[in-house]
Amino acid sequence: MMKKIAFLFLCLLPMLLFGNDLATINSEKFGILTLIPPIVAIALAFITKDVIFSLFIGVFSGTFMICIANHSFFASFLKGFVELSNRIVKSMADPWNAGIILQVLAIGGVVALVTRMGGTKAVAKWLSKKAKSHKSAQISTWFMGLFVFFDDYANALIVGPVMRPVTDKFKVSREKLAFIIDATAAPISGIAIISTWIGYELSVIKSSYEIIGMTDVNAFAIFLETIPYRFYNILMIIFVFATAIMSREFGPMYKAEIRARTTGVTISKNEIKMDDIEDKSLLPKEGVKLLVSNALIPILALMISSIMGFYINGYNALEGEILENVKNAPFSLLALRETFGNADASVVLFQAALFATIIAIFMGAYRKIFSISEAINVWLKGWKTMIITIVILLLAWSLSSVIKDLGTSKYLVKMLSNNISYWVLPTVIFIFGSFISFSTGTSYGTMGILMPLTIPLAFAIGNNSGFDTQMLHSYVIMNIGAVLTGAIFGDHCSPISDTTILSSMGSGCNHMDHVSTQMPYALLIGFISVIFGYIPVAFGFNVWLSLTVAIVSIFVILRVIGKKVE
Figure (cartoon, helix red, strand yellow):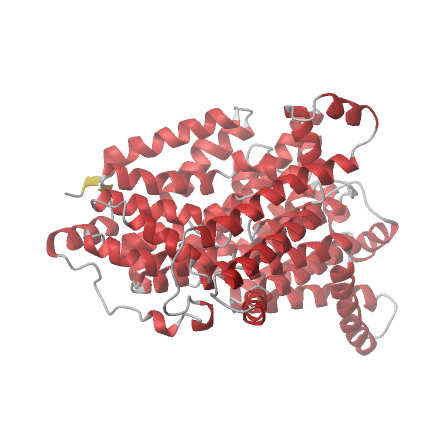
């Protein structure tokens, strides 16, 4: 295990030539000891499976080291704790970070309101009416999973209970239902431009760029550029559709589907009781008329106001010649790219979420679903569901600042910049990201630990490989994509993952049945992501061509190794 951890950090710890004087002094003073905070965070994550505790201790180890240079052991212990607290406070006080926290909480509130109004349930029921066979039942579930793009938890606990009677009717196994839910939860939320994930992803990207001195980088523009490099997310979504439309399965899933189709037994073990996991206060009241508009209008309000907000906010940030070009062609591709690229996503998404909240409360009160005071209580309960995310955010930001001040990157720049081939790095990041995520059961924690290590490392290796500015930019983008998708890949395979557990619960499937049937599928898509994705693009192949080849390979492989389920 320790050899794996050591190799992980040999490959992934950042290095750079930029930074502040404090980082330079500390890198020379502590040397190899600057690796302690991230090593502690990852090692404890492996051992304890608790990412919050692991990040906390990782940050504390760094603040202790900073203090020990000038104080006694006991004094450093106390001052290190104080410094840890100060860093968390500073992370929360940062305007960008505060905006991220508020928009994550507010979107959680919107999800709760829409759920309470019965909107998502109404949409799911509408989709269920379109199902005429086992194929269409699976595709309807897939569509519903894509519709609930804004939150993976909401996806798992909404789609399953609603679509379960439909898939049971057409003899689709609970294992397959759980897989469809799980495969359209984190993968779609992770790449959606409006979701409870985007705030976290933007924050770790931005704080990681700050480590190399790039404080004015537009995290939202970077996020958009990573989307075609999110191979696992995209390919997993396509794979679910392919298995449904082709009626082909393999491995344990094939046995589960044959059992369900031939005997009518959709579940092999005791059904999980939804009453044990659902918060009744967020479910629609008895007698509430289920209207699709209760979901569509608030969600469309969120989406449209976000799009308008990105344009207006970004437009106000433009200057000089670019501003004049946008004025001359306000709806051109250039205008959209510049305005969206310069928008402050943290502010815009928070404003849009507030606007969607007002719309949802007004609709619910007008239709007599709840009173204003009840709506506010539901909204606040939605905030509470996001507390764990906020805690991880604050600790991840703090760990990033500790790594920066200790000069971890500066120490390693001399050691590693010539020791890793540029084409290997994206694959290594993807694999180790998935390994950490599998061991800890969390995508968020993996992103928070690896992102501040990956971006500086990719910059250093790209520079040493002689990349020009555009090549270097694309190289860093693909490595960011590898972090974000590797985290989701490992999370999908992990039996201790929260979304894996919720998918089992939501579908009423035995948890280990879900894990055992989903893992071969996740491993296949992970393999395809590396062979047809990260390795070719690292060598310079066009990302869209690589993605196309990878998608075609899914259908070919299913045709070859998949067995027809009649």
